[in-house]
Length: 315
Image (tube, rainbow, N blue to C red):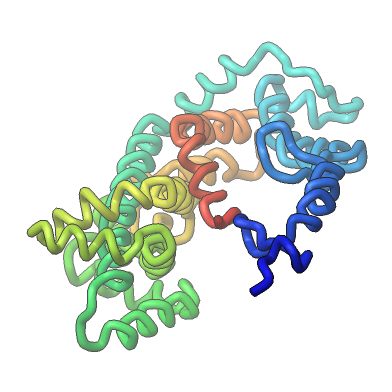
């Protein structure tokens, strides 16, 4: 019997069935491909001047309104909005205008009310939405899918349609005029439940849940030690958005609270009320009202960015 060495038949390569003659050619082709220093192929991933110009334009368009608010608030007597050309340089009256804000309305109380409402709703939404998302994603119970459809369907109901029934309910419960009238209806949201359900479904493998059950962990223990660490970044994004929504809400606090016990948005509306609008006074109040949101964003910036980019790259 002839051996492979005498017949001249190609000897199979141990790597993947390729012949020994094909190995040099494939190695030569691979050597011509551009390789990234950190590993992987490089496919024209460098940004050009046009990309940087567009990014700079978007950043400028996003930051300029906030900067213009600060500029107007730092000038006095509406000099920025007078007949002369508006100045783009901040003035020296910011502290004076902020003091006028606190002298005109009870802004400290409004800030405290907004912080209380926004913090309570953000924390409750993160906790309750995460628990509900874990139940919808990892637990099996009768009617789970139908109940999820009902929860998601409530998102399509306009908020304005529920104001009158909500007002009647709050009044009957004796919550009118209290901060609990703002906190109780916003303890959990359908958007948060669906968002956290998707995060649990994509980031937490079922094998981890089954392993925790085999080890004897209960449902709450499994949620806290297995599921929660994998969705903390997504929960930070949900908390930030919930805080901002509660902080910027104007219509429902205007209905459910008296003006003397209002939130920041009601206080800003009082600064803008009257026959003559003092823009420096009003925008000085806006500068003060933006500071807590900026501080929260700076505190959660890393988790927010990682949570937003969590589903951008797979593999």
